[in-house]
Image (cartoon, rainbow, N blue to C red; front, side, top):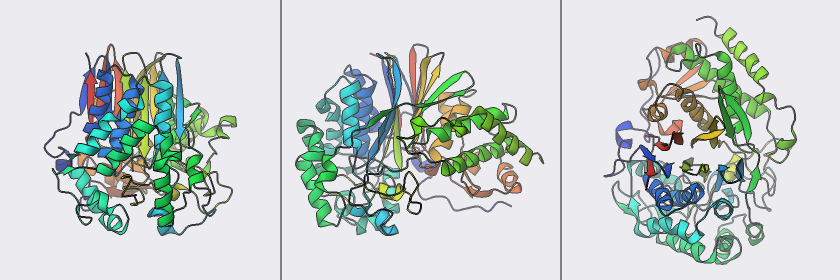
Length: 537
């Protein structure tokens, strides 16, 4: 008998079906471009830039800035941004590593657990403004002022609070009340805004307007930087003016690459988790199509084991992102190693493994898969009332025990990330942009959608029930949407069952853009407030 857990407070399927009085468009098509993001207002912002003649990067940056306004629990100016880019003019495909940096005065390996999670000492130097500005200057066609216009409008005039917004705020209510963000994100500084009410952010609108008029450098060396430094000093934070002045511009890196049948997969190198995604793909490919039927007990079992083994290898083989390009023996990406892991799994089982994402494509072949975050839900729960955005809590994403670990907490270090924005090619042409939020569930969510796209429509593949397996063998799954013999079958082979509600917030939120002939298709995961928007004229 599988023990049933109470429904999650933030993953009720009925409540997630609509956003206030709006039913987001989950699938859309367009000939000129398409944008799918985790909030329908952000997708509208991306589509507006495409309609104005912008390319995929213009749309992606507009949607990313907008997500920081209408999905503040997941991302914003105080966080970091990673992306995969297909530049059609070059043509080339690259990763943009927009890691944030630990402050120079952080005590190596230090900080108490509470300080790592909440408050001003939990934050790294924000890199999202620098990353988006660099991407726009290098690969976009519009000005920063044009791209910021939708975000400024959303902050100034507000957006409708959804069930998901309300529940996430309620979930973090204790930490928000204890932090400096309460006056900004709680009504009267005490309680969550009601579902359907309009939430306005005038301080954030002012900050965004200053960015538009003075440029992103103001965030790091101008008046905004001075306000951040003063706020940090007043609350014991570790970020000083010299930390900000060393602007964390993103680094262009080579993608890590693999195959799924005839498809060529490009994804995020370290510090991201693209290696883990590719190892999962290699393992499941080695099983063979007859073995891996995801909606059967045996298929779910083999999928769980592939996820678990890939995460064990990621933990055991961390690499510094600057050293990784020099690594010759990339065992985790080897098909021979995947064959060995698959054989071990098949032999073992012969008796019977917070963030936001958007994907954009345009008619010229430009593609952006962008994942950004402030780390956990509502980040550090700390913010400057003068500036209006939340600081991240990426200090919690470092290693604190092994001084030789590449992601050990030390001055100016970058945090370990779970993101895996991905671009897939078919016959040497970009076919799919895909990614997801969800921390450790990011790669497993992308994996399952990629596997299902071989025989399901894009919307069905994204909406299908999911599972995730942790290193210690705990399988989280949307049990009520799966065959009822799957949980006991997994238990029989030693896995522990963690039942999640239908369309669980916990199990990621995939946004994809796909080319189908001369039509572009966007799909937004129904697990959150996302939508897809297409432009044809």
